[in-house]
Image (tube, rainbow, N blue to C red; front, side):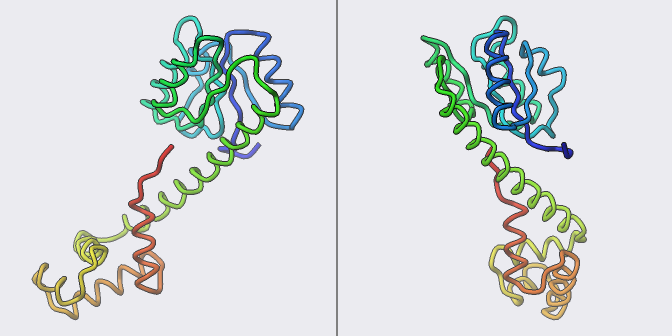
Length: 207
């Protein structure tokens, strides 16, 4: 597998459930890893993980809800599908409110679960690409000098050259030079491209 390749992670203390889920994922050629407890998963969790987490909501020790909270604190932004038993729907609702992607009740329909997993993996891919684009844009703007960044911020607010010159107490020509240098440094040719890149760098990404 390639680095940061998406994977399905199973965290469930029930051996039979883990084996059944593993067999189901193998049947459609999805890469997966399974863990017997939240603690075992946390020992290997890191913010670069991608994919979907199938998480039993009720486990001894660290519960599914507690694991979800810890992962958020650690910056592990996996898509989470909560697996619930009878009577655990209120807990699943709490998990959804806390950021889980979906939940499914036991016993579940295999195709239904696979459809939900594929939806989560698709969303993970979209979010990953968005984060990569944002990181790239932010790195480009990090090359600006403090004065260039001040000019860029005023450009992004929609200010024209003369207004920027007045606010920064510089000549109109100096503003134009700064704008030219900014566009050259971040690798764009037009003002529209510059503003689009700035928007990407400063957008809020939902996990």
